[in-house]
Amino acid sequence: MALSRVGISGWTYPPWRGTFYPKGLVHRQELAFAAERLDSIEINGSFYSLQRPSSYRRWAEETPDDFVFAVKGGRYITHILRLRNTREALANFFASGVFGLGPKLGPLLWQVPPTLQFDEDEVRAFLASLPRTTSAAAALAAESTLDEDRRLLEPGEDRPLRHAVEVRHASFEVAAFVELAREQDVAIVVADTAGRYPVIREITTDFMYVRLHGDVELYTSGYTPEALDRWAADVRGWLDRGLDVYSYFDNDAKVRSPYDAMGLRERLSGAGSVGSDEPDQS
Figure 1 (cartoon, rainbow, N blue to C red):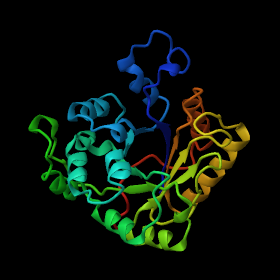
Figure 2 (figure 1 turned 120 degrees about the horizontal axis):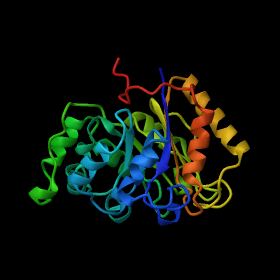
Figure 3 (figure 1 turned 30 degrees about the horizontal axis):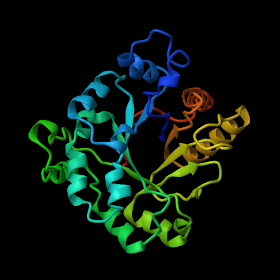
Figure 4 (figure 1 turned 180 degrees about the vertical axis):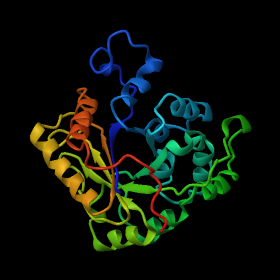
């Protein structure tokens, strides 16, 4: 049975303290507080810098057994290298501690910059270089140039890895990109960005990845009950087609993300099972 997970992009935001987070809640308890109300969170600190193995282990320990994290790939790979010559950077990313999440490691998100135009050969080469199992990721991580105390190379039980790519240039709105994503078994993120960036709703693999940045004002506006109803209908439609769906709210500027996420999750209650996040291997 297909599953739905709904969460937020990040959880450490000072404006949330005293609003979403109760006044006086110590910062180290914020993740646990959010995880009691949602069933997934997108780790976005990994986009800005490599995190430490101890951090990933701690996040896994502070969340319920059935919780899942999505992990955002580093901007050094997507924005500095711009998807080219990324093998060493990918090795360092996978060595930096993501295996510390254990079975709570969910999809990996690769968000490319709005200045990056679609180049079929370059995008194919990058997507093809992404490891599709934790054992393959560990083999790549073994090439890491990180110091030993910054590395975690043991992946634990071998599990499939899922990847999603979020594009922001209109040149990606072509059939060739959709077919390439299908060929590489990678999800194209359905991104709601108040009309600023492309919205591609094509099904390219066995799951959908949705990022809700604000439908009126980017990163700021909350979602009305009617808007949440529409997104819930979309998610139900994907679930009915047998697709797992991961939805994350990134409209944090006015403390809307957690409330909108809880609102969508409530609407979807019973619509999808919470079970294994491993793709069907049959």
